[in-house]
Amino acid sequence: MKSLSKLLLIIIAFSVFFFGLRFYGQYIGYDIGTLVSDLGGLTYLYSTVGTIFAVFAAFVIISESQDWSRLSVASKDEVRDLNELFLWSKRLSKPLSEKCSQTIQQYLETVIDKEWKSLREGSESAETESIISTFHDLLILASKENLDIGAHMFTSFNELLSHRAIRIEYSCQPLPAILKFTVFLVDVAVIGLSLFIGVKNLWLDFMFMLCIVTLGSVILMVVDDLDNPLRPGEWCLTSNGHQRLLNNIRRS
Image (cartoon, rainbow, N blue to C red; front, side, top):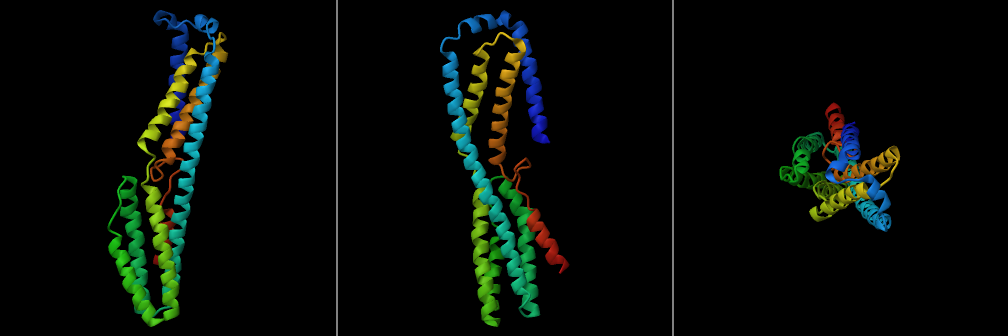
């Protein structure tokens, strides 16, 4: 809804600008009649710029959406690995099982309350390192108590570390500034140049330019949204999966 509201404001602002330019543009030298009669090869050049922008934007969006998919899968796999650790730990002796359960809960609480926020701000949190160190000690104790269970827990723990690393990597790996600036610059150029593709009919011209402005704005919003996966938006990775697992462990 937030994106739709933002898009609606852009459309309203553009509509006011467009009709103001068409009715009062002659006072600043913008004459639609002159533009229509003197297009020359401008339409072909504009088509070339538009095609380049479309290819470039498609490349960026596909790349960002793939990163989003990897991030989403890694987050789900991390929750699955923690659940596996919890289930295997329940087969251990009661004191060790309770210690494992407390450590998993502590890990989840730290990720939800602290790490998610720090990653959203573009920095990593070191507070989970001590918890991971505790996991290592518990795995040694589990292996001493039951070698088979310890081996299963060790496998789940290795996968946990791998998926956690992927989640952190793609959570705070922004699009290079030069690439993001290029998308913005070319988008603005495509929208700006459309003002010089004159169409005599007022409403046809309005619909033509409205489509360009809308598509250009949507592309910019999609790129920005995908580039900030932990920020509230249409593509927002939440800690709901971690929270559900934490609630399940607390109830058990």
